Image 1 (spheres, helix red, strand yellow):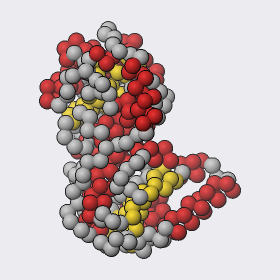
Image 2 (image 1 turned 90 degrees about the horizontal axis):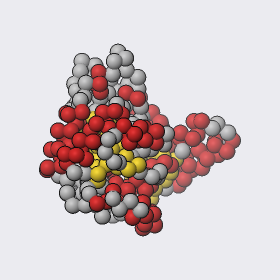
Image 3 (image 1 turned 90 degrees about the vertical axis):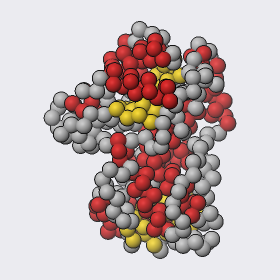
Image 4 (image 1 turned 180 degrees about the vertical axis):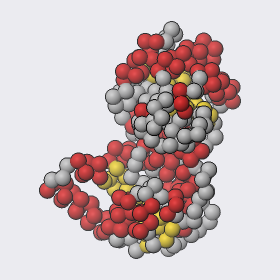
Length: 359
């Protein structure tokens, strides 16, 4: 597989955190195959995470979420055109890092001559294994999803897959647009900035807003950081509620796209969040993080790399991965106290945070 003409189809279609977690595997693939052509297949909302990535030759965007909700002749034509585009590339190898039935089907429909996939026991949907020719070895429980992905890269041959850091790039005009917000808020940039992101993908991941407010006040008073409250679609009221509950001053972030978020977080010193896309985005940028985990396993899906503290309570029902709490008491998140998270913040500030004011 070291032929310079090899064409790889790299399949990790979603979501924000999962795409960020796949970047080390892409880097390892490029290190092992420096002259190959590598194409990444990704859902439309996450294409901007791959902007100007030097490890890639091409990004192909799909819209499976849109297609499922809009069965029309136009949609069917778009699906047909996407399959045709994939087949025209004549991929030698597809790598399915997601382990879903839909991604296995995509690999099959791509026409790739060799389809590589995760071990059946590591797939989120085991039927995915029906679509792959060759499967990675099983990775035991207790491994991070990045390690599971790197294990798949071993099937492509070459040296041991050691990823190289790759910055998340954004266009200059995006950085300039975000810089205006900080220029307009000079008091915010007078001290290092801690970002608090209270949102998450589903309710069981959420921590109480009044606890975030108390935590934020302690960070301002005892650590000397300013607080920037970040929010995603539909989450602005959560951020505003924290601001209203706080006794100290805080700032609400502007509405941002993914690329604008990257530029925004580049001005900050620390991210504090539940398990969410922005948390993993910041970890991918190399920003220190403190995170609060409940229904999801931080060992498998926590922020990847050094400089991260995860606060969680292991319960008999821990790591259920459910969007609604089966016992309705939400103990895994309810039992995490403000002081526990504050102590993680304090440790992170002392070890990892650059206490000079933001740019």
